Amino acid sequence: MALKRVILEMGTGNDLHGGDYTKAALRAVQDALHHSSLSMIRSLDLDSKAMHVEVTIGVQKPDRVDAAAVRTSLPRGQVTVKVVKGGLDVPEDGAHDLVVIASAAVAVRFDLP
Image (cartoon, rainbow, N blue to C red; front, side):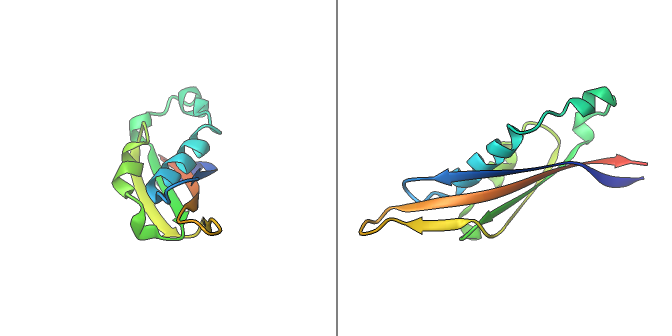
């Protein structure tokens, strides 16, 4: 058997004030999760504990995302988090405020024949 992707959801999150990359990443993951219903897991009688969840976060400063916090925000499955360069930083004119926009891709895989 092999791990096969059964769900892929994308989300976007931001931190409008303060430049918090982890906050933007967490919001992007929640946005992706709120676009999904995992009813097929129940329909196919799959064990959600056997689910592999792969999260990829894109932000301009990947080293500023707390991947462990993102991992613990996922309610089920064996979660891995990868943070890559992406997203967008939008500085505010004449101020010291930074808008951080993060992108998230959440893939769910099961070991299927």
